[in-house]
Amino acid sequence: MRLLDRLRLKSGGYSVRPLAIDMGVFVGWRLDEQGVEELSKSGFRSIVNLARVGEPGQILAPDIEASFARSFEVEHAHLSVGHFPRREQFEQLCQLIDELPRPVYLHSTGGERALALGVAYVARRRGWSGQRALREARSRVITLRSEFLKDFLLEVVESR
Image 1 (cartoon, rainbow, N blue to C red):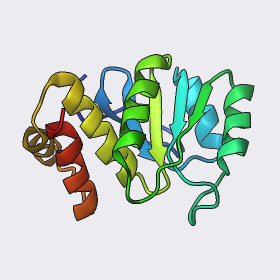
Image 2 (image 1 turned 60 degrees about the horizontal axis):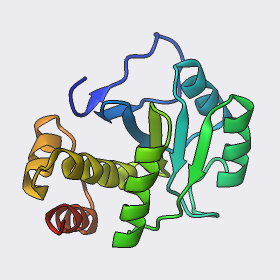
Image 3 (image 1 turned 30 degrees about the vertical axis):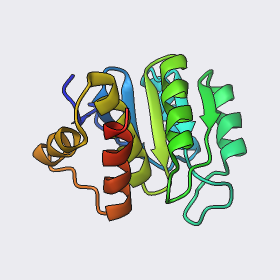
Image 4 (image 1 turned 180 degrees about the vertical axis):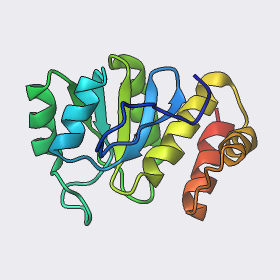
């Protein structure tokens, strides 16, 4: 699977559109109960929610999402990352992704934090520069709108 491919789900009314960023690692945006079930039926084994509790735009609170995930036998982790992630949060996320069973779905409320942090994870894992990570994303028509998230991606990838 290539970086940033869309997961091909059966045609139908799916609410989740996972974006593959690495083997077994996908990103996307907020989930509802149906989305958790769809991921489970598609073979996902883990979900990582990056949204803060009470964040505007959430459909499910992280603890409710975790409950749904458990009911579908999917591992769930919550790492509260605001719109301005910190380096230690990124390090925690890398460790989480490495430890959770795959495939894993990493998401944030609007999806952009998940995309930025996920691409940074892949870049670090593959030994890419931050600029190469941004080029890879742009070559597949994926653009980070947030300058802060772009700068953060470059910083955490280049600093290791």
